[in-house]
Image 1 (cartoon, rainbow, N blue to C red):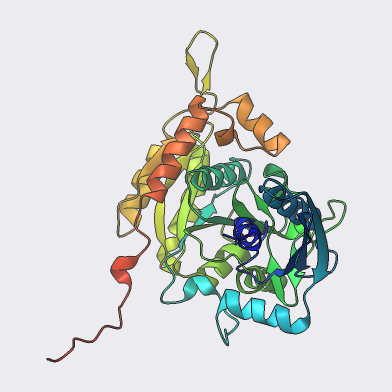
Image 2: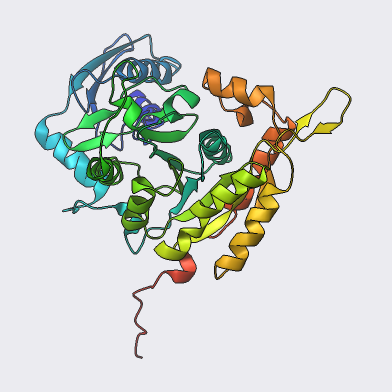
Length: 374
């Protein structure tokens, strides 16, 4: 292979940090020139001027080419796509003449959508969401999170994301952390400003996240819902009728009673409940004993009540113990499941494995196949 071909091959392994596809496939490599001394100049087209990850792209291109035998130096020249090039990129990503809509509702979509709900705040719903998503991404799945808790957004902080999304015309590219694509209203406000919106604005924001944000082909999409059964929960049922609920509770019977309302809402919306997750189940003491600070049995009680109310059995997917490391992971923006195999991490990984092993819906997919007459 010529040096030109070797450089081209090396660049095919450089992945755009937002679109998660090779830059050669996305039409971002404008040209490659090589002088007689082995100096390589690579022209790279950014999607927009001032791309926040231009330094990352430039660094990755330099690293990919610099190690090739015969290359004496690497120069990366950054340019910006023209409008027609951006239009071609959007058509490549979304398909020709793609209509604006929610891709997860398309008949051919195999993305499993889980709406993580709770009856009350403070049960660790967001922490559970980011750890399940991160565990699935670490296992090789393509995962996204929509932080639908507009008033109490916390997912960017829990995932260590400070980068703003990139806009390519009307298309929004979500930031990626630990292999998970994330979008949140917290990425659009300054200095932790409160969001004071009424119901219609909440619905519009959620709809825009689902239509304008380009997640690509996901295996799993998580929605971190606000507590209760208010506007956002209703909007999710309307915008994503195929979403399944994951109900998070604590062992306390009072918390399970409140969480039961969030789960029972499925009877009105026609949604399924994928299972119950009990958080803060116990605290393990230095001597090995378990202190059940919030009581016990709330998760099992809730699963049993929902099974009696809903047309299908609802299982308790797991009970997560209290751990200081779980809180530290959230404060530092590095989910616990990445740090090791503590008891809480093991339970979270097991729940993620259970959800990941569920089929993506091929059984309900109609194939347009017509038998051929001989």
